Length: 172
Image (tube, rainbow, N blue to C red; front, side, top):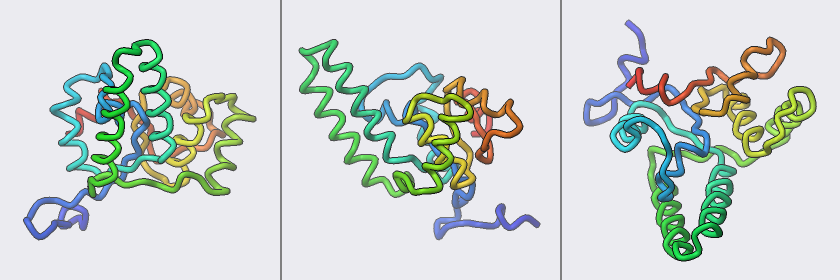
């Protein structure tokens, strides 16, 4: 009998054992930014109950960057967008089902630098999030094509798995 199937918490429910690192896209709705992901509002709660969810704090910075960009395009919504970001931040930081990784360390930076120098991944947020997944040897949930394409290169550093929303929802 597999040990993973036997792990349960005090209420008799399964305790999540598989770790899943989220790209920023999946945090955006918590900050009030809509994303085009099928049945996100219904399936995200199932996701955080099935997996041990991780995110890199760089995603919080990237999300704020996106909020600021939206507020520049829609100045009348600026205050509401900034308030919603703070509310979302409180929610994420207080939810015990969602954990922060380290922002960075020398190993994460080495992987991120390799992604820049050898594989031309220019976006720092993408590099640091992907490198974090490699460092922790976790699954990475991302829609980013460039990061998925790294899997085609045999020499590129790889996390445990790189998957899209459409793939993860089949597992829920």
